[in-house]
Length: 437
Image 1 (cartoon, rainbow, N blue to C red):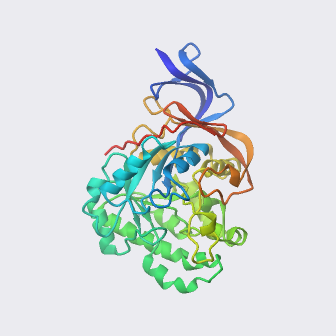
Image 2: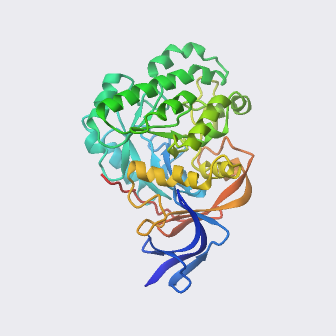
Image 3: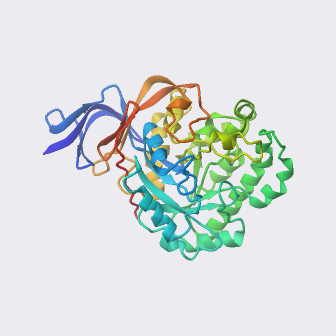
């Protein structure tokens, strides 16, 4: 057999092993792994001295289309993704209008056709009114699942009552994802917001309201025997609680919660550090890292949520929450790998293997025969400074501006197509992901 491509001399990193081998690809699929020096291919790509990972999947991005295209759209967001070594994304439903019915979901797929630089899937938003439609919506091809906001964040989606949450979980079948903040406590604690003081954001949206919401949704999920995914976990209490509930609840943590801590981030970045749930103290951050080390954490997702500079510079608390992150997820986490905060294999588990396993993505997340030839190629020795002018997102800024990191994505490959090499992005080839249902 003659192959389309042979990737030569690669240091392959999977979730459970690291080894040097060649990879042969035909028609976008991995066909052979081993010593392929005697094999023929249309092209040979030598990646000796580089690491090749299963394509990184960012399971939490907000690309703002429709309704907020001035600060991001599906094209610019996925360009940022492949620049950062990301081969696939799950996009969130809190757009304008919200993605809460079949017409809105199909509209997103129509918008995506031929424009996206990486592979993609879209969430559908759960509401108090659409729970009977959700079993159909969650199984539309390319839908990654149902997303529920228990606490109000950007947009208008909110399901805060136990009865309404129970209706959603009793009707759906696939793993659902939750923004876990308690709306009643958020309303009650608004008195702690101080005009012009971003430091008060973390006091208002404190650790206890997150913990309360997470306990509530785990209880409801257990009653209904359904799997749930808790997004952007930010507190030590949640990590310790969720460690005891791994049979039904999976855990996602963001790079920013692992990198920044309060009060320094608010003193240095002001509103640019504002997100929901907030960046918290070093004590909470250390518990999150403990969750990374002991296996409680399942996924690293960026919660890419861009806003314009003009919006961010409005006086707190009228400033919006959220920051860009899809382009910086890989370099920030590789820097943590180089600083021995986690291993490269654990990074692969958190960003490729587990997203595919937990959400049942077909053909993604592993370097195995028959899987898609999606690769994130990295140089673990490359040092670079992250700067605003590198950011492809329409917002044009990053909270990591001027941060020096070691470890960098040098090539993004999707189904054997090089879509990014050395900061050059090529034609958009993204397609919807498929799921085992």
